[in-house]
Amino acid sequence: MQLSTPTGKIPLIAVIGATATGKSALAIRLAKVLGGEIISGDSMQVYRGMDIGTAKPTREERSAVPHHLIDIADITEAFSVADFIEKARKASIDITSRGNIPVIAGGTGLYIDMLLSGKTLADTKADDTLRIELYEKAEKEGAKALHEYLEKLDPVSAAAIHPNNIKRVVRAIEIYLTSGRTKTEQDQHSRLTDSIYDYKVIYLDCSDRKLLYDRINSRVDKMLEQGLEKEASILYRSGLRDTPTASQAIGYKEFFPYFEQDYSLKEAVDEIKRNTRRYAKRQKTYFNRIPNAFMLDIATESVDGIYCKALDFIRSEGIAKGGA
Image 1 (cartoon, rainbow, N blue to C red):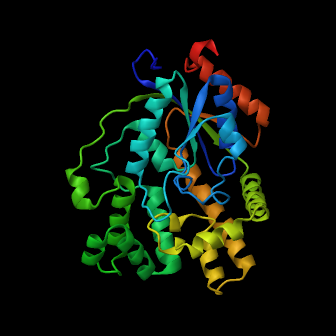
Image 2: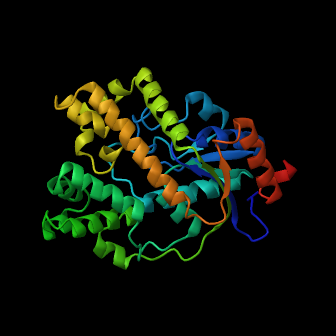
């Protein structure tokens, strides 16, 4: 029987927050007790082979709770927010058709925000976080590298825009990554006008920047112990550098100069940590804008305390099924 709320909409729980705040662990714990299934809200966990660097749930975690939108694309495939919305909507409908609750967990703010809110795709405005990332890429790698990235995504637009016109190059990339279409195609595409979800958002924040950065650094060190360098090398030899969107993944792209003998391993690792910390800062800025989120601070709450408060919040909002 299809599960729905009194509004007739699909009930959904979103667990959001910056990288290394414990989103996945909390989402899995909540899903177990509430009868939920996880939808990954991470833009890079969709790719097969990108396991360690994207912190995918383990086989044991995936066997304990069903997961969706993980390992659904090859690294050679482009994947946009439009693709995510389409697949996440289908997954949520499938989950509720079995009487279960969709629990989305991830740190890709643009994906989650547009899915939950039902914002339009045809008139997608510039996204601050994405734009900053693209300008940083231009500053770090040069205008030519940014233009080459656009060529992978939208060769028609790339041919019409001079590589030195960074503003137009950035906007063309934004259009593709947010809509999955070129600007011409996007203008012809129908829009989403309303959310199909009755959603509740749990936001794991961290008021102590040093704590968050220490967690990030430790997480990267653990990934290296688990074999991140080898995983990145295999993907690099498979052509990761030339892929349209997978090539932008933090934790992998920083190894490219190392594999090409332009960086030492230490320099590559330091760059991963630095880029991850910067990304976490942008994530916090984005998530702070999401309205009505139930915020829990990992700097002041224990893991069990956060779980109990999150569970109480969900139950008080009437999302839990069957009086769980």
